[in-house]
Length: 147
Image (tube, rainbow, N blue to C red; front, side, top):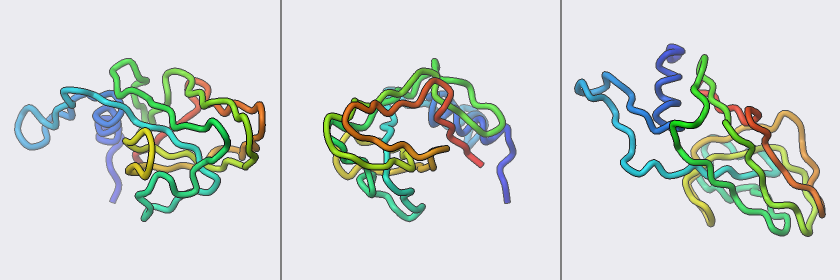
């Protein structure tokens, strides 16, 4: 079974733009959060499996690394064909020590610690991080699919 593209887009709008998803339950549908909050983007050295809920699983450890907040806001890009991407660049702190190869990213709801990993994806190409490297997703480069 597969979701229809229109429903995928509506679901992504609820999750990433904090907009109502109409016609589920009563006429008002699934409502947006009163306080939208943020997703926290993490970088990983291996792709966490779907059974993993701990956002620290294989998470980057280079010196100065921190997860980056992305607001759930109507200013984000509108989903199309079951895919939404970032509307602005997501820039991680520049590495000040350590060396590792990043292969995946994650999305969760905690700024630090174990967190609650909700989505994962592979990077289109591995990124070797060492002193002086600043990992970044340019606007439009981090794609999330509901399919």
